[in-house]
Amino acid sequence: MSEMFDLVVIGGGPAGYVGAIRAAQLGMKVACVEKRPTLGGTCLNVGCIPSKALLHSSELYEQAKHSEAHGIIAKDVKIDVAAMIKRKDNVVSELTKGIDFLFKKNKVTRFEGHGIIMGKGEVAIKKESGSPESIKTKNILIATGSEVAELPNVTIDEERIVSSTGALNLKEVPKKLIVIGGGVIGLEMGSVWRRLGAEVEVIEFLDEVIPGNDEEIRKSFRKVLEKQGMKFRLSTKVTGAKADKKGVTLTIEAAVGGNAEEVKADIVLVAIGRKPNTKNLGLKEVGINVDDRGRIATNGHFQTNVAGIYAVGDVIAGPMLAHKAEEDAVAAVEIMAGQKSHVNYDLVPAVIYTHPEVACVGYSEERCKKEGIDYVKGKFPFAANSRAKAVGETEGFVKIIADKKTDKVLGVHILGIQAGTMIAEAVTAMEFGASSEDIARTCHSHPDLNEAVKEAALSVLGRAIHI
Ligand code: FAD
Ligand code: NAI
Image 1: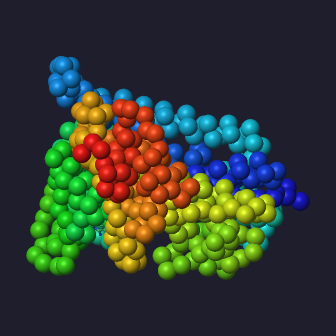
Image 2: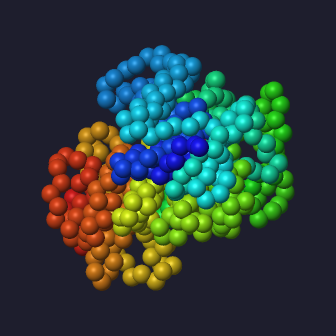
């Protein structure tokens, strides 16, 4: 007889490991099945953390080269790509080991192998060799995340044509890097390699980058990146790719169709999105429904259509973000434990960790218009913020969108340095149902970048002070 668990979590990423730990805190006997040798999922191993490590290192390099305005003259600044990658790997290794420690601390049993749902209350664990082991459980939480979406006729080999995973491990700075997809990965990883010296060109199918964001932010952001030297071909599609030892030749044409053209690069990064990871999980056999995009269908309580089987994170609907995955998982296991938890997807912040950063939460102007919401907007540029001026980083602005009748804040959009940190104020205020008057009357420390949030709130009310 195999051991009986209260919960078996399949996947050890931000959704899986956080769900496992929270369930253990709630007194459940928990197991987590992860096929990677290390815990932490996409986020810690090949996503959020390694990309942020390289973004920071490359930013330090760029700053070191251009600090004359501050009276700092650094001659012959050089990079050591291998050392940069090694540092990134060390950061990943320390953090993934940290999850092992947390599992031990919380008495979560860890199984290494590919998890397959055999039926209600049974998960098989398939290892590289040997026969699968089977474990029994009261509930199952699917947290298998997502994987790279591929483009027809463009085969990822992780050498010349890479996904984000390959782009995190290039051995040298490519002379020319073409990025297919002007989304978050394309612009973050494109920024890394541009800063390190590559000529970077982004090919985007739509007529603007970072779809889904506020239109004004999208345009302003692209212009900032253009000023930094990144090139863009918008409304363009890639129809084929040929890779050899010397490089890659892409065939492109207008998104609406037209004459084909060839463009060459040393490395091509495919970053056109990610798809739910449900391969060989036993969904069909057990009868678990998926939606039209292959994501596991769940109700508001993260339950699938099969009793006792729940799903969270990238593998279900909603933004594919680590913090959303974590919130899903906490809510799901609390619901299993009889609590009344839920996640407000309207208040999941999204950040692009470029320089400057982009951060947003809630409604864009376009969404307000689409939903017929009468709104007022207030805007404040960092050029008029004293801290931004003092550090010499005046690009961008804060925009607040509020309901015209009630003044309730509906959305906050920031383009600027540390936008990702600044957005937390907006998320907290919005969680408490703040009006722009509430933010405007909150005392903000001086001189701080967040004063731009207060001024944008004042601007909604028509009474900004410093502009
Ligand atoms: P995952 O992290 O994908 O974890 C799923 C785990 O399940 C994996 O470890 C996988 O090996 C395992 N698994 C799958 N199937 C099975 C199976 N059958 N049996 C056993 N194990 C299985 N998000 C942010 O919020 N901020 C960022 O800065 C950010 N940066 C990113 C940068 C990059 C380059 C990428 C690719 C993604 C980034 N993301 C970021 C997105 C973030 O990584 C995901 O939203 C997050 O990892 C989703 O968590 P998850 O637990 O749902 O899935
Ligand atoms: P994405 O959805 O952000 O962007 C994909 C881009 O590719 C879009 O602009 C889309 O219009 C374009 N595109 C799609 N098909 C195309 C084609 N055939 N040709 C040219 N362009 C095409 O996806 P991305 O950048 O791959 O990231 C995947 C996920 O990872 C995202 O959901 C994102 O939320 C998450 N992520 C989050 C980060 C963060 O929070 N800072 C960092 C990196 C990734």
